[in-house]
Image (cartoon, rainbow, N blue to C red; front, side):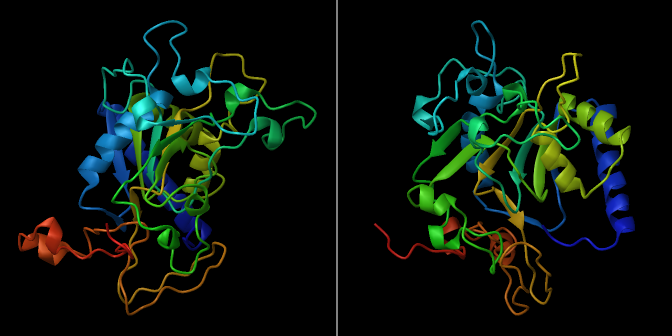
Length: 313
């Protein structure tokens, strides 16, 4: 993640974000998209979100027949190979009524600087801090392992460009899947909040957890732990369940490194971004980098592609 400065700044930012979530609740918004002021995205974001909405439904849309649970929660995870579906394999009867993204979700983590594909719970027996280590993790608290594969996505850079910043290590995604593949999955160890959407119910739960409870770390780290189910303890018997947080790899929104502004990166492989060059990781047709052309009315074919393919069909 990126250094935010002193503890006082983190607290102030945390309160500001809490006010944002409070506005979502008080205004009774069905959902809201929250962006950092340095976020950037591809000019084709509308079509990206349309595909993401379809890919998210196995996590966010209960099935129309009993037991009325999302597909991701109905799968069993008794092998080391995670279950996977392509877009074409998603059941056609998952039709949401409230939003295109599904009717039962808390957070859609659309912009980040790192995430992990959820692992087999049996292979990663971690417990929340302060809990009894002799108690096995409850599968209902663990993010589902289902992966939704979006192949041949022209907005995804080639594997060598899949990294959170110029000095970062390459994302494992590029080694696991063919070029131009995007994966939609449950949020797991996700960091940075360049862009995330909250539902009305999700905003209420976040306000309860971090408005009445203590904010002990940076907001993205607290949201990470919340989405990973670390606040749903075994002693809770009031019907509360694991939050439904869905993310995407690579992200649809990313941090823009402006020209002349060096960012001190504390992630693995960190360093200083080139002051003489603007860039946005993961984003090919950057809105920020192409703003002048967009204002002038340029078409897609006239925009600058940050990460053009080495070979074209």
